[in-house]
Image 1 (cartoon, one colour):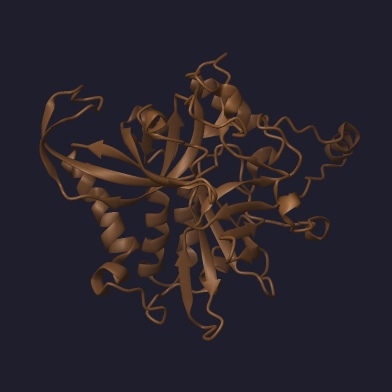
Image 2 (cartoon, helix red, strand yellow):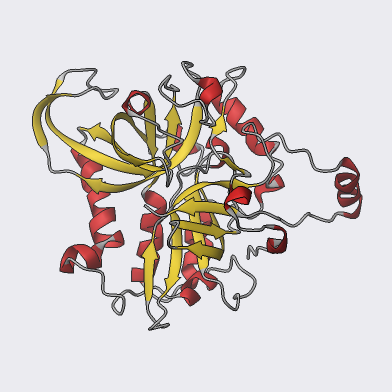
Length: 366
């Protein structure tokens, strides 16, 4: 059983507007000095924020070891849908239109790769006889096309120029997915809507693979948003998940007194997707902000934040939101070159002690 020990020093964080500016976004930036896959692997193995990534669980482990603890197949389906609808975003353009105060401003006009995460949440009705620019059609007219909409952070994909240079990787669950073609890659099309103040956006990508479309529809309709699509509303009393379901997964040692569980699916360092679980530490509905100790890494920007929200009038009911992961607090540069004290690292190595994670991450409601 994988268990996570948390030690978050929230007392040191004065939640003022000034302190919130001491944060960094969590795109993974590739230098281009190595092959993309090799650089991703190197950044994953040398990560200083979460050394060893022991709290990051693979989809296979999560499905086989964690979901088996839940009592009903209906509950297991919801968690599997969250995993399957999470995608990796590889962006090969940084627009010159980004403002001077943008964290990516130094990369403007370059074609270097950066990696983030997104979440598929809508499939359009088909359109007919349009040019398709997927890797298979190369501009030829496709008989039928559909549009997927992907939710992510705006600092990952800033505008349509960047969206057109974005690869959307579906089902990248392990390294073998690329070799056996289980991973599907789509090209971005345009930025549909965005919010700079709340750091989220929705971009679209076009697909002409009808089998893939039906698979995604099944995930969205049958597993994820079934209650909403059947009734046109989400009745809190009918939703089957409760906070105990998150704790029964075995990824948290004990239930916090006043904390709600927060689950995140992301692509840390551009690697195959991982699942992490922590607890909500602060929520500001007026500022559309949520803070949590769920582990994240560079590459997690834009990831869906599955948050259990406690209804104040009826504590037995639940509503699930999906804020967008935006970043992490701390004095860390965009390259994330944090260096823990060497003396402490040496003592930890000699004693065999594995350092506890002290982090506070944040996301924004759409």
